[in-house]
Amino acid sequence: MNFLVLPGVYAPQDDTELLASALQEEAFPPRARVLDVGTGSGALALAAARRGAAVTAVDVSRRAVWTARLNAWLTRLPVRIRRGNLFDPVQGQTYDLILANPPYVPAPNARRGPRGRSRAWDAGHDGRLLLDRICRDAPLLLRSGGVLLLVQSALSDTERSLQFLREAGLKAAVVRRRRIAFGPVLRSREGWLRRRGLLAASDEREELVVIRAERVP
Image 1 (cartoon, rainbow, N blue to C red):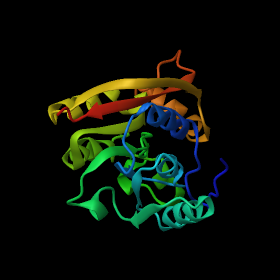
Image 2: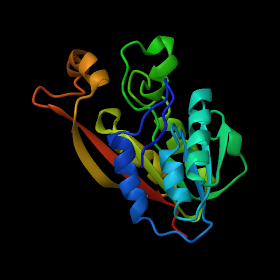
Image 3: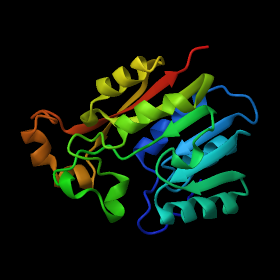
Image 4: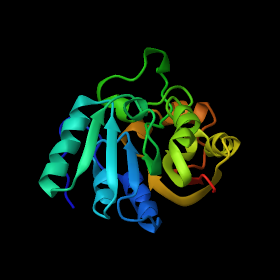
């Protein structure tokens, strides 16, 4: 499906596709409650809605919220879309499935904080500006048997995400891996990443991973 993407909104890319492939493997009943946090264009929210789930999508960007609403209208799929910071708009709610494709790229100018379009990818000096919050807070919103599907770069410490989620009592593992060519953002900071040791001299591709974390009944 082709998605409408307004200027300044993160367009579906390899990480979206990788997370969507993991979503397709999940078995959930009709009307399962699904949360897509950091929805962007709404691609993942609509994929879940197409399977009959009751979907809520959240994004901090006004443009992303309008983009997701337009795509939901164009596809005639019912998705509840809210603007807010991560889980703030859904406090007190619980879900069978949470999808998360947050910013995860380490940024050299992290003190200023991401602005404009860069909010879709810049994630602090270690790439974990939002990952730590998701790994801490998402387990609180999962029902018994509920699942979190999270995509991130290996540059932003996959093992730390797994540790956070396991310490929260979830059964967590990497279920998808894909190596992709460096995009414009990584190419622009490749030297900095290599100097920090996040990219080895032999690394010519970025590794993306999908983590699946389940609250075991």
